[in-house]
Image 1 (tube, rainbow, N blue to C red):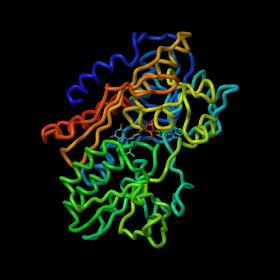
Image 2: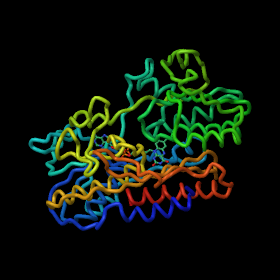
Image 3: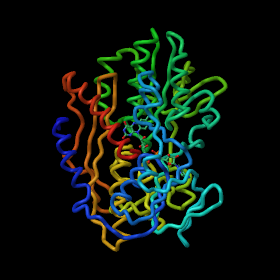
Length: 420
Ligand SMILES: Cc1cc2nc3c(=O)[nH]c(=O)nc-3n(C[C@H](O)[C@H](O)[C@H](O)COP(=O)(O)OP(=O)(O)OC[C@H]3O[C@@H](n4cnc5c(N)ncnc54)[C@H](O)[C@@H]3O)c2cc1C
């Protein structure tokens, strides 16, 4: 499917996200936990859809640092300031912004406990806490190792700057090793965008340097598009090692700087380790995460399958075929807000249609994308066949440049919608 067809489809289906977008007028108290893409979008959608609701947003940080485009920060193409968003607009919308972490959630009675020991009562809760890294998953890799020597940069902020600075300090002829986890994880194409932009940095700034991408998988999102671009732009500079060729990292050693697989030991000048992940800790405390570490939901309403009254959206949720992306978190937020407003007004929610598009940059001015449309089927969010697709493999340079511009305008649109 061509990009322009997909964009038309996006416009058409965006208005279908919820048939008959009725303004539910039921009153009630909704607490949203997490002021990222999912939570901020949900809080604002709830205010729009049901102005009579009392909406509180619980988020400990004064500003949100966005991950999309953070790979460009690492490659020296963008300032981190462009990634930062505050909550003033949400407060101006009438949302009670509470600058604390949630430390507990009870459902009988329904209330959230905050870090200062106070509580917030709710009728329905929207939980959008994002991810935590699994520090127990890779021998040798813990929070201290990440902070000091082998940054993950999979949560944007100080880690992004650490990886950027370590890359800038790489010697000429230096070796960078990246490790990519198995599915599922935040942003399926994100590691390959990062590999591309690091390769661009090495090509333009560090003579004879090399990047090896060690992968715990044999296949990945937009694979042919990425690999085509790598062949053309970064020959001999970027090497991808799949699982079947021994790509899975099995341990790291911070003291010696080593990254180990079952077949090789690498001693790179810089290691970027992206460890396995799970829903952020509050999900487990609330009893909505299952043994996988992620949260099963009813795809019609995003209500937890484990605890009634708690809706889970964004990266933390098990959203079937939908990837863990900011685009998806925002789409789920709007569908979930409608369902919550309906349920509080005693209206049966209609099944949603959800869109996702993931853009990636493989170089400045060179963008690629994958899009999908999803709906509940047999209790899971399912890809509507033929409704999406990737950019064409043989697209001309103008199309790649246009996709890079679409990526920028998407970021502007989604951050404006979430944060104002
Ligand atoms: C390198 C990289 C590139 C990416 N690029 C893209 C892209 O191009 N396009 C795209 O669509 N997606 C992209 N993503 C993915 C995107 O960032 C995530 O999918 C998105 O942020 C998920 O939104 P969320 O609301 O679930 O979580 P988040 O946006 O992470 O928000 C979670 C919020 O919850 C808060 N929180 C956590 N615990 C608590 C608690 N106990 N109490 C209160 N608050 C809490 C956190 O402080 C945080 O603010 C990228 C990710 C990475 C790492």
